[in-house]
Length: 410
Ligand code: SAJ
View: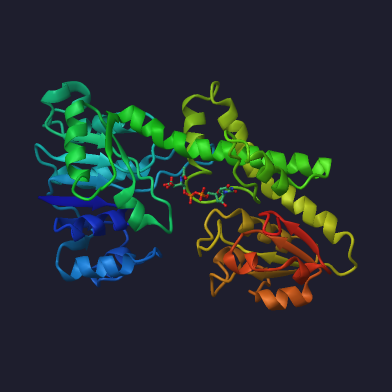
């Protein structure tokens, strides 16, 4: 059998490589010539542990190929971005474009699986779009089990940095437009998933994925709100959470400078957009997490007011610990805001990158080492709990004002 993966990014490429490593012929399709050429040379255009070796092996054995144009296959997996627009409504244009790409090569009996995180109803919408693109086929949203194509949703749930392990070991939620659609998708995933494949409807699968990330967002918002309350009440929030978590049924997450990444800060909006009146906690949590960077900046301003010549060291720019990913990072936003204001001298420390991102290019900023920052700064702002920072001792910073958004000093 032959599988085609549409979209060779953080999800599509690892998925394609893992399936190819099981001996299945895989054609990856992407709109980026750079991505396609890189992969066909056995290399990778994204950073993820061990992915380079896996892709190289899959390309060398001839099981994995990349292309700008689609070819016939038995199953098509769609792993394209589903961002939101300015007004927080979901942008499904990449999914629609992917369908337009594959529509001409589809044959009766093909399976189409949506992996991209999507608002409820998207998988049914795919069936409707395909009905327009291929009027010669019977589609599952109108023809049920008599349909010529099988359509299902199997949301990705892998944690960046652990993608190759989690792709294989995580349980998967597989929602079909009909039960037969789900069965067909389960057969595909059983080729490479060691976790359980749990069958449901497409709508439930869509909502399950959004729910997982909204759950985490709401819980982080709770921790962030606590941190602000504790500042006001002069209580150490880290000690408080540690103590409260000793209750057998309490498990509070960690406050931080805000929520970054491409999923948790996006997906809850899909729920809010689908049920604006009902999604109250979910919306509020998003607002709390989105406003946390502003609160941190205000704290830094107040600290800077105490010095004639404030020198502020920002420790960390990535969106979370021990990764080099700066996209949608609250730490980066805070650093940029500080640079754009005339608060003082700003030192940037990010041990996981060699060069500052384009977003900071307009400012006269440079990367500094941790040691240089410790020497020069009178204000230290911990924005990411990278391992290099966690080994700092309270004695290293006694002469400075410390704003520790991650609780590395407890
Ligand atoms: N964060 C906190 N406090 C915490 C935990 C996280 O402030 O206690 C912050 C992080 O610093 C980061 C953001 O939240 O800025 C998100 O980080 P994360 O590690 O919680 O999640 P992601 O975005 O790397 O990956 C999530 C995962 N979802 C869940 O854990 C429910 C992953 O399994 C999903 O596959 C991924 O989203 C996705 O693609 O949807």
